[in-house]
Length: 345
Image (cartoon, rainbow, N blue to C red):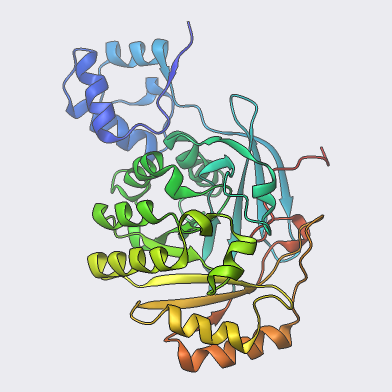
């Protein structure tokens, strides 16, 4: 008889499970703490549950994490992990250290991506499927099991996929991540990144989760954005701006705009002025990032001088501008490079 995997179960789900087994609901909260906070996956060792309950859990349930297939280490210390899911699909996660002592984990929310942004390797994978809440949380649990409680300090949902197209499972995962008896990571340390899914942005605002929102902008002129991001047809910039104003009004949090610079495409003074017009009335900061090369795609990475010039032109016109260094380029782990390729096995 196959066992039911409890990976991804919330406290409420575990309480309901206990009630279905004829037990008190509070045993579900106890089990949640043992699994996620104590990282004890052997039910026989959960000593504040009765022996009969422990035996039944052993027979019918397990807590099975992700299966690592491959790991790559960059010269800059970035690590990329390739997992193989139960249905055979690949999943990638990236762990990024920085000079300030932070450990940021870049988490995936889907296998592949339907949005097909023309500069992104993940988009080239095509449609896979949504990750379950357990598969999202499982990426973090793997790192905790391997490196301990200090495995990561910040979480960014900027890996494979579009989180706001998998919002229900992302929200369930976030409830486990931020729970005090769960992974106990403050929601303020979690950033959800979107290519501009307008209904999802509004839903996220209404949920009041206290996570931070990042938007992959990359062009502030509608005709340019449409050339590189097909989602701009369904959700044009005017609708995106309206949704972001709704979000900032509702949450009182500022938005981060991620802006990838492509040589000779979106790096002119015209683009600077377009950004300054677009962000008017939106509390925000802007992260600039030079394009990370992806084989077979017809884009060029700008030089450091171009990126610095663009930042200097933009800063007087925007409240906060930072230049983000690419990490893990040599192992295909940088922004836009994740494609779950395992040809070096």
